[in-house]
Amino acid sequence: MAFIPKEAMWYLAQLVIEITVEDDPRNVVHVNYMLIQASSPEEAYEKSLRLGAEHESIYLNPNGKKVQSSFKGLRNLTVVYDRLEDGAELLYEEKIGMERGQMKGLVRDREGLAIFSPIEKSQGPNYASGEVEREALRIVERGKL
Image 1 (tube, rainbow, N blue to C red):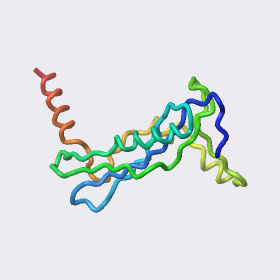
Image 2 (tube, rainbow, N blue to C red):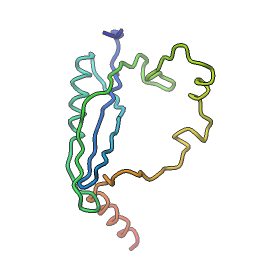
Image 3 (cartoon, helix red, strand yellow):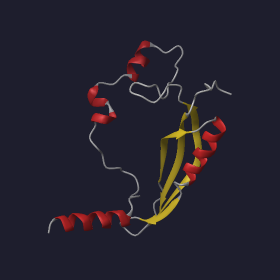
């Protein structure tokens, strides 16, 4: 078992969620990084599984096709060693024997960072909620009055 500090109270769970859309052979897989507050690794594990189960749903997309979201399990569960505050380390990766060229490939300029990248429409199946889209349109229409 990994080293868990006595005062540890935060964990990072990676939930694997599969989304399928009726009549589309492609699936969409999300790995959701979720912050879990727990007093032990076992509690963090159980809470992570419950949180994953909450991602299970079936609904219709704007085209009337059935969308199913299924929790497949945990990819990983790690402890957050630092207190949650500005600059706290949430997760790290360790690479051994990496060549300088490979290391340079890990670093991106400002424009290459996700936070500064334009939002791109998914090329995958339409798994948007038809109900949410209709409600958003109603709100927009009411605002035009």
